[in-house]
Length: 263
Image 1 (cartoon, rainbow, N blue to C red):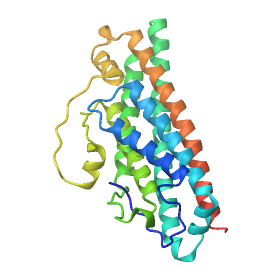
Image 2 (cartoon, rainbow, N blue to C red):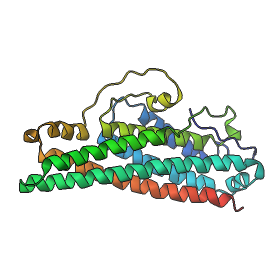
Image 3 (cartoon, rainbow, N blue to C red):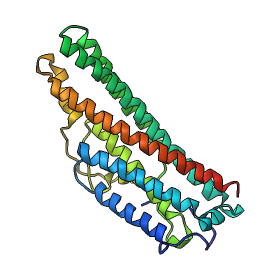
Image 4 (spheres, helix red, strand yellow):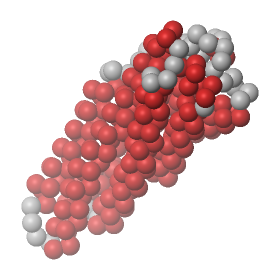
């Protein structure tokens, strides 16, 4: 399942091209990781790293002379616009994620300070933290409404199927990330993409993670553990670092697409 980018040119690199083959291998690994029934902090961070590496590879594919020539043709203007729109949607998701995580981390740091000093407005900071989490989820749901997922073209050699598939697995990553943050039920077998494309019901299971453990502690300040808060802050920092690297790769990738318009 992927977003379709039809290109009217036989000069675009086929899947047998070394760089195209490398992208295909990366996409296969990402699809395999998405099929896992559960998510963990380490698996999410690894998926972000893999998505970042994928976009570096896509950037190299875009920069190939044969790709530049194909995309610079007037009849392929719409395909280039689709690539730009898709990259912007993903960049928006990335930036929204970073902003929300930054707000949560700031609240967690203040909560740790209050716990260490054993004085301060703990309840107020807890409310601030929970509000930031709620805002992250709301922002993602708003952006998610703009996402469009469709089937790839049957004739792979005549389409930019790589880029559509890349957008789909990246959307699935952010769907998993925000579900993890909100403590939502998790689903495997490409359910993230399936839910965007169909009304098919998928069996899901609730999960306990760094976020939900801290939530449980917030239900009673007496059971709140400093260790849980520190673990969550560390995890958020790892996510921020990964998303920052992904953001840089996305910007570079987007600039490469824009450069094709000047050819």
